[in-house]
Image: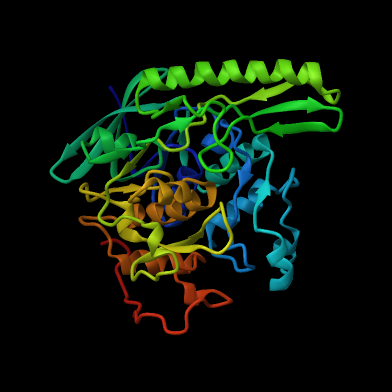
Length: 401
């Protein structure tokens, strides 16, 4: 068996994995990112969910900063396809920002190519077409992961790891407690079509909420191979039906241009961490916050993300993206989208880079995040939400715990 080694192994190259790998590399770690697809971006690119949802609260105040904002701006570096957040990009006043949320629709090919270039410049080693299939766990630490690629099995030794897989694959391989979506995922089949006005994103089916799926009675968890296959069969069938309908009824329709190359399963597995995120904690400051996120579905709600939601029993393994610890599907639906994935990914990557013989303290991770430009608490915002923050004192820490 071939062997590779690194300081930080990142499982998954979606938005959470990109953010985690970038943050870890910028913190001085030697990083390997293993991705089973042949492009970065996950659902945002391969899955054609090409809407970078809001970094703001919908009331004119930006919540998510750092790499979350860097990636949004990267996604529209060559122009926004829709939802252009011009007032935010120009730095206009709050009243102007209230009218337009800080979100954008982007071109998936440009975003994938720019993301790859960004990680390679940072020194990240990207292993494409690589599926993780085993772990070496000793005591409470992951020592290595096993993967399969074109050459066969490869063992990747690491000092710390970030699970940004979207399905908690490393946590499940380690025997950590995970929770599946009890309601399952409704079928979706987003695709691009060529029309006389150009390429248009067709959002066929969606996640739960006001939109519903293509078939509300057909739901799939996504953690079993057979479920994934059945989801894809139904998604492709419904997509073909929709294409035939548009061809017959829509004079502007020309032909399909691009189909998703991965199943559009939004919520598969999440970890049981040391602290759950809860929707009822909306507006509540938490001492060990690693960043802030809003609710993409409605204006107003805002959340601080606790560091303890990013880890479980294994002391050198961190969760990022849509697998972080949440108490129910309401909060999970908030945390599964692009900005939240970037916020948790950045924090997990920094925590993994700082991991030595023990897990780094929350204060060490918070200090590193602040140095990187992230804002952690409501009162740090330009338009502060609370008058009296709880007390905290920055402490000096060694580079690694």
